[in-house]
Length: 209
Image 1 (cartoon, rainbow, N blue to C red):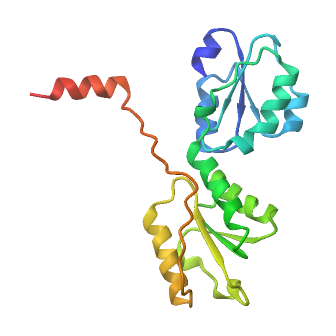
Image 2 (cartoon, helix red, strand yellow; image 1 turned 90 degrees about the horizontal axis):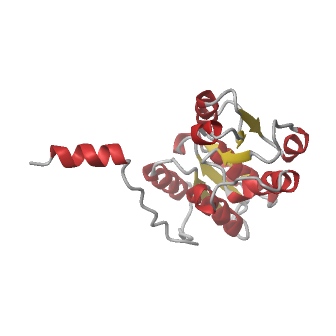
């Protein structure tokens, strides 16, 4: 964001107002950045120079979340500088794809995540758009057995930052409620690794004897 601002670009940040990452990013370059939450906002916004526009995204959004907005911006600003595909959160996209897959069988979807987690909320929306009932829960203690009256199959997923032990605790709770079979659905193996920032790499090498 700071690099594009230095180069004289108007920055368009696709994200959700109030999200911690959005607040922090907008605070870095407040004079050059605009928040875009919907395709309609993308159609209405104005910029200083249509030839110098760059778009960045909240990292916990998926390709599905941003595609429509980016398409509108590309039509309006043919020279738009957009992030590489890999800059979009792979973990968020993978989870949305998995929810779409399990809605074929699961009548109820439990999404483990915080109430203020945009990618967890989006998972419930994906399930609901597929015609399934979805419940966003922090942990197993929030499960209501009445959700499963007459239900044969329950799907479980989690937001990108939810720890694995919460998932296992929810599965264990479902077993106590009568679940007899657990099937894990794997669409893709996540094997992305992130290198340390250069500053930490240099500091680590200096600390070696």
